[in-house]
Figure 1 (cartoon, rainbow, N blue to C red):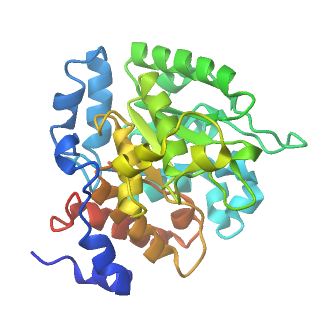
Figure 2: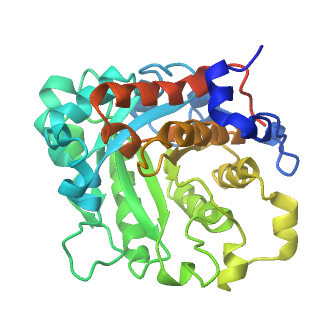
Length: 353
């Protein structure tokens, strides 16, 4: 079966680089790869209660990717994290929170992730029409000087009351406040599980020392992979992480535990291998990894989005959580972009590397 012509054309001269690569360090046979049997294979024997399994099932079995084991989630919390004016000036329609939910529904997303305010204001109208994921903490931008901290904006019970099937949260691993954030979110996720909700963790890294004179290692495969590994330790059901841009973070920054042989044994410089290391740190794929779509750059967004989806899928990860590339465009174009990303996961010829 040939790969979709439009995908090949978007990739251009790099098509073979991405489509023909085979991971030889950590092989696909070592992974729990996404499938419609994900929940049965991973969570049925776990300590998650049956209502959590039901919530996960609602998420994985909604939208255009229903029953595939993959996720396409629309996240819009940038009004807090990046300021509303800066986030929505390209498309002011999204100051109205109902349009955020409408975009996720029309695009066939598995779920929509947003704030207490956005989802709560529309809960009675939409909570039964698309899975709600309430983002319970944020780095609000008005603290000056800004600092790498996440503040809880509400209680887990509030999310449950509005009909949410999951809560999401961010931990800034490496930041001065990360230990407190880790404790807070571990406790919040325990409460969410007790109420029957699934949990998604934004495993981001933040520390000025992670950026050296040579490179920025905030998205290094080894550093982000360890953030993922801590994230699954607090029993997160789905990990959100940035796609790795390089490697050797521990070595070049000069902290943590590392050995030259670990890099040679586990990965190469190929972007699919780097993402495979992130997947391995999520209990060899048993906990789904979704990568973020990144900011909007304009004309290159479609190619970047499809490439990110391709790397994610071929690495053995579980989908994308993409916001700005979609909602900072006219409504129809946002839908088209999300459909193009979803097509990567629906394309049977694009296999695990």
